[in-house]
Length: 315
Image (cartoon, rainbow, N blue to C red; front, side, top):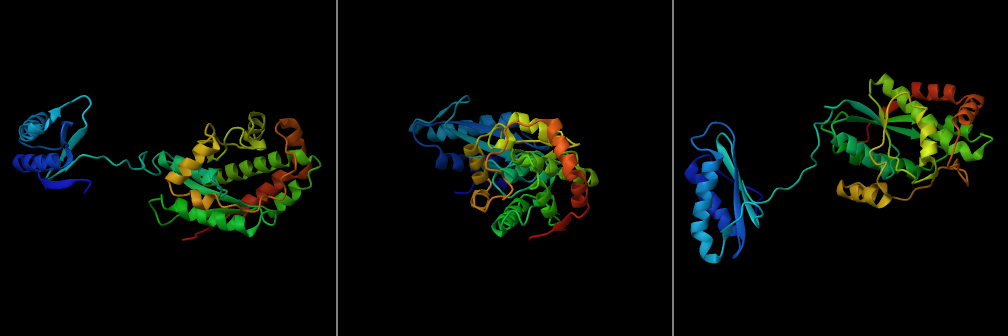
């Protein structure tokens, strides 16, 4: 059956259609309520419409044990009266909801193509932020399958953007990863990498007049996402870091990915980063990390990476 039925915005036509819908949707012994909404100028009010339709339906169906229950009805007959047309329905199908895209400002998303970052990006888009996805390309320290997944995830995210002019921003970070790989403290390489990514994203965000960066981190999910490490990593960003998934576990995040049609793409197994140490640090010290960055000249390399960011459209 159709989600809603249309008729003219005349009282007689509305009552006739509402009765027809009631006869189809209200079963024997069930309760019902009528919830009209009148928009614009009409020779009747919502209350008048509710009373008249309720009376007609009750007269027709009371012999089947049908009754009125305004507090907890089995079936609700919704009526929307517009200028010319009116609509009658009994089910409301939830959409995405949220706020208009772009109404709340701009963010840069650290977009990896795994499950977390596309879902985090989508959640901020849902709340009205325009999101610029930034992919930190770590080749040759990741494989081609990793790149393919990023491209597919971007195409999937693009479905939610109300514009054809939407591109993936790519920062080539092979030289950066090579330098991080030289760190004498192997355990801190993931923290150094994350801080570099935040730094690149925040500098790029300044260039694009964005108000912050968004990431897909979930507290305690991996070694770099412990509170002590997040504190150290956050210090590298000059803009607010938004983490919409911070309190969700993996099962909950996967459920959201399924809901928006991204799970199959983002759950694909790919070759991991070759710089990740066997035992990454779960707790780091800001002064120690900053000294390592200075010795490795990471800020200078990050600056060069930002200068060479480019856009690519995978449509």
